[in-house]
Image (tube, rainbow, N blue to C red; front, side, top):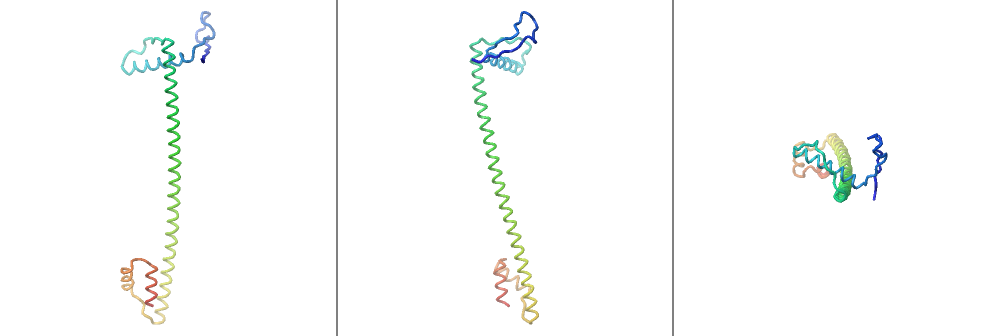
Length: 167
């Protein structure tokens, strides 16, 4: 069994009090727990808290200490599991967020590439229109282009091929 040795000479300087007192650790733990819980219960129920609290006998003290240590162990294990789960979930969320960020970046780069392609196609169309006008060929008007877009949707490659066939 564990024993706690306390130097009490500085607390009660008296020749009647021994310099060192050995207290059984389970009794010490359970007695402190008994005093704390009794005081809390008295405060909750609005009873006087300045009254003396009788210490537990050794058998009850040992049982109370064992119960307290068992509960502390269970709560420590439960707390450790909760901390582990929270950390694991936060790591999983961080991975998901990183994947979302990478996907967003890929989409942004794809959009930029498509925008560049659209600009390139528009400049080619303008060049072709200028060449067609220079040679006196018929150039589709905006109404024809809009009609083609309505028929074909906004698919630029189909629009471009159809435009090429008209020229």
